[in-house]
Length: 337
Image 1: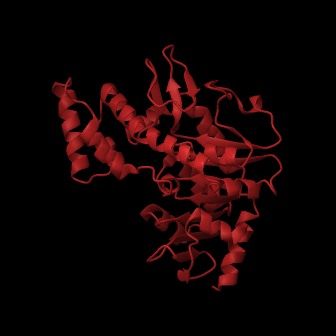
Image 2: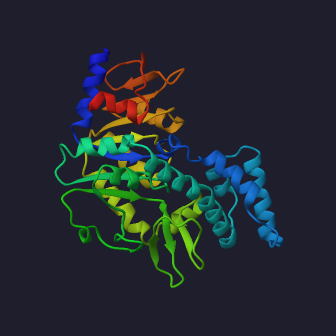
């Protein structure tokens, strides 16, 4: 496969106005903690001084799994934590990530460089009439910041303002809208004291009487997502994937059932084309893309150093290694814009 063919394939898939799917790797590029850092944070910060009996025993087993190197999702599947401990895990997760997220926002105010995602949004709106769909498992607000850098409105399931209420998509009327569908919740979603879920912008501590609405890995996430606003957001994400035939995945590992089932189905049964750019292909992504089930794909991961890329394609029998950073979103944009 020649370099020209590689460019052509990337541009062909891009010109189909892909649904954007953001995984944890897209946030790692901004310095946000991943699951490994979160595991260490939970071990060192969750207060167990008031636990006893079965709860304390469960936490100690859970902590021992994390210390031994078991990934967070597997540990949460193996040890069923009580509601009290689940709330503690959610709060600790929020307290780790929220300052990092706000730090990204504040840093963005000091510079003139826009996020690569903002550049992508502006590029897609040159060919897309009314809306762009972004589906993400991330809690952070980088997609929201990018939409604002691009100068367009965004919809996340809520009204706009400082204290946002759940609202349907038609409540936001604008010439161009980015739908940001956060299937695992967001750092600015909270259950209020009266039990409804609201959005609160840029708060630096959890407001008294409120609980963050972010879904941690493990069994609890399937229970939580039966409720609003998750149920509606997941349905919207399913529809976005179902109604498209092109997908641009950024740092997505194909390890989330809320997204990957519809995505895999579209790519296998309906011939959808998929582009994946990432630091490193996950085992799940590698298995799906390289097993022959996906008929139209382009996957790019980092090579031996930042200025080298390994390219896998449905149009070639073997991967090729090329000079250049095409595995990051900013590098990918050099191919298509």
